[in-house]
Image (cartoon, rainbow, N blue to C red; front, side, top):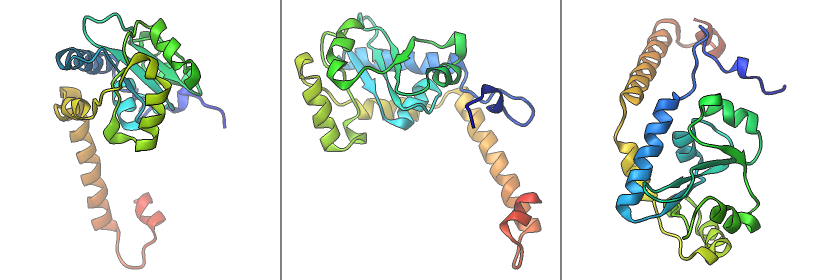
Amino acid sequence: MAWDAERLTGPDGEDWRVPVTELEERRSRLSSALAETGFESALIDDPVELYWLTGGRQNGMILIGAEGSDVENTHWVRKSLRRAKFESGGDDAPDPITAQPRMRQMTDALHSLGATSAPAMLAGKMPHDRWQYFSRRMSALGEMQDATYLMYGLRETKSAWEIEMLRESGRINREMFEAVREFGGEGRSELEMAAA
């Protein structure tokens, strides 16, 4: 089945994407935090953090420059650019979305986007061997720094939209458990309960 943006809406046609304003605010907060920490940039490839920053589940990376740096924010994608652009807000996406360069081209790609030092990455969220691989590939830019706790700290503070989504999720879960209590029981199949 081919990918189709029309199939990515809620039951009443709601747009289920993370709002572009939310993505912009998250990236801005990361950019400010990088500047405060003294990191020139961060290169994020962890799927959870990537979703938080891009609104998408594409396999790829996002480069975020520190506030005041010359690093250009860029979302790199390994597979579907079309889907990544849709998930990040379409024509309103906060930053460029392009094909991810091969690792042997990474240093040149980072230089072309204004990087003068190795970007910080999330050491706490990747295997040691992967960290070492990135360190070797980007060694011409210097030593990589760890931004794991920086990201954790940013994600701890919830926005109004995130709080609204948590409440909505809680409401849906409550309805589901109430339906299970009312219609479920011994001898009922999961399909029967799901249809209730």
